[in-house]
Each structure stands twice: as structure tokens, then as C-alpha cells.
Image 1: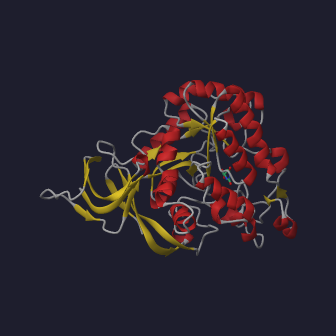
Image 2: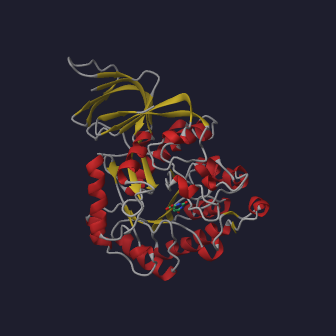
Image 3: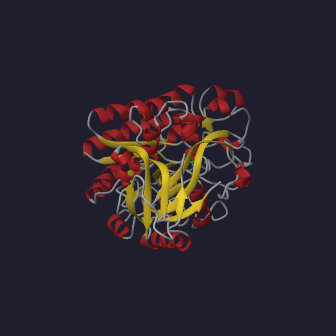
Length: 424
Ligand code: DOR
């Protein structure tokens, strides 16, 4: 198969030019200008389109086993592919949790049944995400764990975090932190500030996140560890991580599209579709997140795809679960809010969606376009304007704060091991 005339944007080797790609047996055989098609070779003309390494989501929730009414591995993967993703890393907060080899093998085999998508589960740091006993790290790694996280919950016992970090790092693996001080979160619903006051809702102060980031950075410093912060949402967290990186700490971090496209001001009533953890913050925080993306403090854009049933998201906001379905809007939001506004170049944005997560998690065959590698690619129309229609999501969670948003730029094809799935 020959992909003709597309513009390749490959941050890994800083390449940005029009070129052809020949795919054979699921692998990239040749990258060169003006490749002539073989007889009988399928040729796809991608004039005007962008070809990037397949998007990688290092942070999502697929809900199976245990919460199949919210999402299954099958619907989650379909949603990811529809958003342009060729690799995903589901978190461990299922039921049972992915804290043991049997459940890990179960989710991996379920994923294989439905797709060849790169499937790299993040396993729990502690058994049952209960913050008490560290999981069997070496067993989980030898069964395919990509990293470790209690995401959905913080590890609050600093002794345990320190031991887990030393242990997991000694196996050359990584902790991904859900940084939250739950004594400060205190059952809050949205960001603590003028909107929570106006609506009479219990607030989650911004220091809920930055206090946890600060103390975890001290643990990282004391162990010389390698550590990744999930879903960074506040100005102060960005500043702390920027400073830590300057001082040479081996830390990375991610944010999610809703933290650079929405603020608490978007919450005008009691609509739970905006309810997410960490909560939507202020304009100042949003600007700091964008600055962090620009200066490299924030390495990765992850979706934190956190589907719930429409019924649950229509409950009174106090009772509704936290989470936004993110796969099918992440690329469009990134292109619309960061690239078309000139805040990031296309290459910078694509790096945060591809090679940066691949480098952090050491993923083979993802995040790069090179001869000999698996053909995991995403074809993008940078200028197509489209309206988000949540009722058409492949995810079971057909509710989104971005429903009816007009976005510019979207994935048109997801290519997994050389197989094309057309979108839109
Ligand atoms: O909003 C969220 N939803 N934040 C999390 O950290 C967990 C996630 C979930 O699992 O629903």
C-alpha cells in the first residue's frame, strides 16, 4: 500500500515535509519522495493531509471489568480509534482492579480479541487501590504492565509512596501520580471559587493538587526517582514542576484538553457534564497550563477519558461521578485551542500526543515514523471544521461538555499495523 503526497510531521526526528510512505505486511517499508506504485499496489492520495505517528493516550479509563455499563474494552477501543489513537494506556480502577496478573491478562486478551491497537495497561501501585500494600511489581511487569498508578485515588501514605517509588524505579518502571490531598478535596464537587460560591456547591481548592505535587516532589528528590504527574490543572502545580525540572528532578507531567479549553466559568448551572477531577479551574490556571505546554514543563497531552453512563452524568451534580469522555474530542481540541491559535506549532502539539508519551513509557513501535517499524499512523485534516456530536460517539458515554462545539482539525484515518480505519 502506498500513501502518496501526505505531509509527514514526525517530531521524533524533527521531520516535517511532503513524502510518500510504502506499507508492506503491516510495517513501514519505505519513506521517500515520489515513490512509484507497484502494479496492483493500492495507492491512497493524501494531498493536503497530515500524516503523524499514531496518537498515544497514556491515560484513559475503559471500565471493564466491573463497570461495563459505562464502557467496555471494545467500545473504549472503538472510541479511541475514532479519535485517531493507535495506542492507549487504560488505568487500573476497574473492578476487580488491575492489581494482579490474572486481571491484567484478562484485559490484555480482551483487547486483543477486538483490535490490534497498542494496548498498554497501567497497573495499580497498591492492592485494591487501597493505599496499603504494594502490588507484585515484577510479576505485573512480566505480564505486560506499562507503568503503575492508583489513578482515581492518590497514594496518600508518603512512606508507602517512597517505598513504592524506589521499588518500581528499581524495575526500571514508572509511577504515574494522581496528585490530590483528599483532606482538602473534602468531598468537593467543583473548583473552590466564585462559581462554587454562586452555585452553593462544595469547592475543591487548587491547593488540593499543588500541595500533593509539592510533597511528592520531595519524595522524588529524596529517592532520586523517576515520576510522572497525571492531569495537571493548576498554576501552582505547573510552577512547582517547572522548578523541579530546572533543579534536575526526573519528572514529567501531562494535562488533558479540558484544562486548556474550559474553566469554571463554563459551569453556569448544575450540569454534571462539567464535573471532573481535578475540577475545571480558573482562567489564570488555564493560562498557566498553556504556558507550561509552551515551555515544555507539560510534556504530554492525555485524554483522561473517564466515561460514565449518561444516566449517571444526568444526576444532580453533587451525586454524579467525575469524568469526561475524551478520546473523540482530544485531537480536535488540541488543534483548535493550541495549534490554530498559534500557541503551539503543529509539531510541538503532535509531540505531546505521540513521541513524548512513547518516550516516557518506552513503547516500542509507537510514536515514530520510520522504516522497519510497525505502520501505526494517524492521518489528519488540519483544516476541516466539524461540529462535535456526542450522540455519535463510539464511546458508551454519549455526553460531553464539548457537544455542539465547532472544532477545526480532526483525524481522518487511524492506521494500526498497516490496517486503515476511515473516520468521519
Ligand atoms: O474525573 C475523573 N474521573 N478523574 C479521575 O481521576 C478518575 C476518573 C474516573 O475514573 O472516573
